[in-house]
Image (cartoon, rainbow, N blue to C red; front, side, top):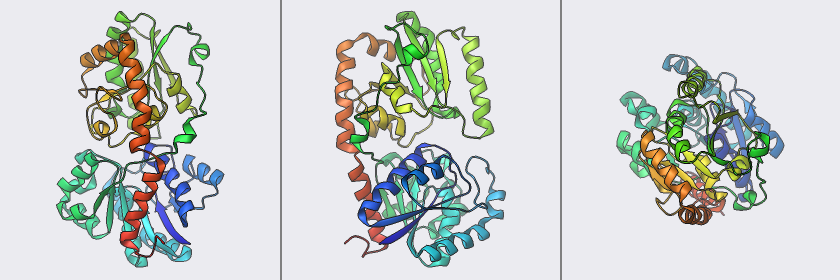
Length: 389
C-alpha cells in the first residue's frame, strides 16, 4: 500500500475540491492510501470523515479564500514546508500531490525536504491567475515540481506558455466521475418549492458567486429571454466561499436585478446541497464565465444528467461541449448573443432534444471516473516507477 499526501489550500466546497475528493475516494481501489492536508476544517474534511479518508490540519497553511497576498504566503512558507515534510515522513508518503499551484509553494518545498516527488494539479486556465506569470515565481515553482497535471488542454497551453521548460512534464487528465452515481438523482421539484406554475420554463446557473463566473451576463440577458418566453424564470444557485470580493459581487447581482426590474422573475436560492437535483430539474443550464474556465464541474454534472447546456466558448469548455451537438456555445460576455441563443434553443424542441440526448453520451466518452483514475496513476508512476503493479 502506497500513501500519497494531498495538500489543498482550502476546505470549502469548490470544483477543485470536488474532483480531489472523488480522486482520493476512487484511488483507494488501486492500492493508494490518500491523506489530506488542509488549513482548517470545512466541507472537504466533513466529506473525508464520511468516506473514511484520513486528514491532517496544518493551521499555518494559507487559506486560498482568506490569504491573497504574496507577503502572507512567504511569511509561512518555511514553517509550512517543514510541517508538510514531517507529515510525509510520519505517513511514509511516496508522493505529495499539491492540488493547486498555490499549494505547491508549501507542498513542493515540503516534498524536497522529505526527498519525495511533488505532483502539481493545475485547475486554472487564465494566465493572469497562475503564479507562473511572474518569472521569479515560475522558476521557484518549476524547481519544486516534478510533474504537472492540467485539467484541460486549455490549462496545459496556459501553463506551457508561461513555463515553457515544463512542457514535457505536463499531462492533461480530465476530471471524471462515476456515471452510475447520477442515475438515481431525483428532480428538485423547484416549481412547487418556489410556488411556480407547472409549465414554468426554468433557466438556471449553478456556481459560486465569483465575479468572472458570469451570472451578471445571464441576468442582463434575461429580460430579452422573458420577452420571447413569458413563462421563463431564472434561478441563480450558489453562494460565497468566504471571500470579500464574492460577497460584494453577490450584492451587485441583487442590485442589477432591481435595476432591470426583474426581481419577480429571478430567484436567488443561495448555496444548496442538492445542486445536482437542481440541474436535473432545469429546462436549460447556462454557464457563461467571462474568463477562461478550465473544466467546470457543473458542466460535467449537466452532461451526466442529460441537461441541455448553453455555455461560453472559452477556456476548457469547448473541450467539454461539442457546439451544436452536446450543447451550444456563445461568445463570452455577450449578453445579447446569449439571449438570442437561449431563446432559439428553448423554442426549438428538436434542437433541445438533440443536445439533451448527446450530453450524457459526451460525459460517458470523455469524463468517466476510470479514465480520471488511470490518468492520475500514470502520472504518479512517472515519479514512482513501482507504484502500479
